[in-house]
View 1 (cartoon, rainbow, N blue to C red):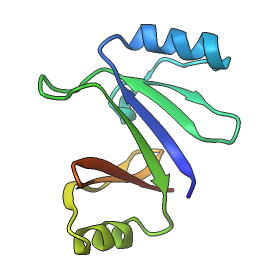
View 2: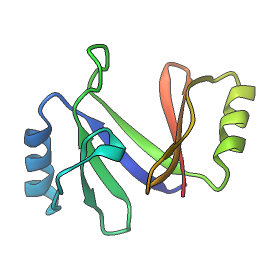
View 3: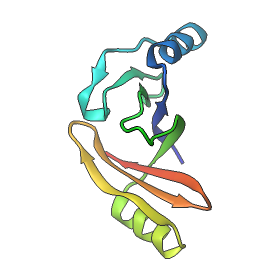
Length: 114
């Protein structure tokens, strides 16, 4: 399994970006509208780290690792067959690929296809 995108939802985006910059020597760009305004940094293995603010009053801070899958529709169908709730069906993210989120056992399980 390979993590393609690590999404951090934080109340203080700049503080989290500064901490990662200082502790991991990564450089964040400006907000990417295609990723909910996330400030992103490319990691050494090509993965993407994104830090963004909650997009609604009900969204809580969370860390979501998105696992790279070859067929996102098949991954979501497999998860649903195992009893997972589909929280976000496959959704194309302009210039980034397709993501999806399912909930299994109270945990968000995230997929990404490029």
